[in-house]
Amino acid sequence: MKIYFTFGADGKSVCMMIIGHRGAMGYRTENTLSSFQYAMELKLSMMELDVQMSKDGQLVVFHDRTLERLTTKRGQISDYSMEELQKMILPGGEKIPSLEEVFALARGKIKLNLEIKMQKISGKLSSSIRDYLSHYSLKVEDVVVSSFDHRELLRFQSLLPEVPVAVLYYGIPVSLNEVFYRMNPSAVNLGLEFLDAALVEEIHSAGRVVNVYTVNDESDFQLIKNYGVDGIFTNYPERFLNRS
Ligand code: G3P
Ligand code: CA
Image 1 (spheres, rainbow, N blue to C red):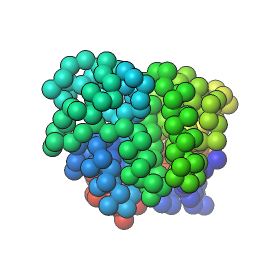
Image 2: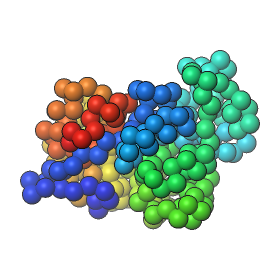
Image 3: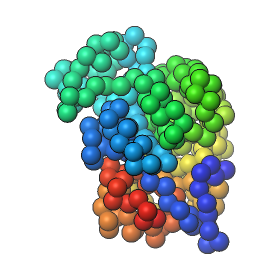
């Protein structure tokens, strides 16, 4: 069930995908159009972004549940309308983008890993993605939806089964059998801190891709390569381009 990777004879990936984390957040304010634009200028194959919902039910791209770290406002994303959120100023004078603005920018030139960061957004997310796939003539493989919330991800998949999903873990699960059986994810995205050779092998044996977040250092990159993982999320894609 590989969607974008090639395995060598030893079962290891022969080409590691460099995925821009929150766009290219090492160089631009995270999850902004400027960060996504830069990831596209670097000609990355894929970039990752975080999706939540505003008070008035619009899909908005923002990582934290609360606003304090990146704006002068307080409270949660879901306490504000899209109009209110888009008036807020982020570091560097940037704006909080809507998901629609990101699709309009990307237009299939770069694959999108949309990470669900909030419960109960699958209905809106699935209908929006369906619209964008049609509007921009995208292939379903141009989008992958991921989440640590596997129940929400399962809901999403039941609504839009043709779009690939990736399960996120921060830790090492006892077993992956149930998630493979019930959700059929194309990829398993693992935290760097919990990487384990046996787990990578188990996932590959099941025919799924392994991506690791967040790889920013050379030493970690070398370790990851030895594990034979398929892709990395990185804040600094320029460090690793043409290296894999
Ligand atoms: O999707 C990989 C990574 O983005 C998950 O962690 O906290 O950066 O959203 P976080
Ligand atoms: Ca994320």
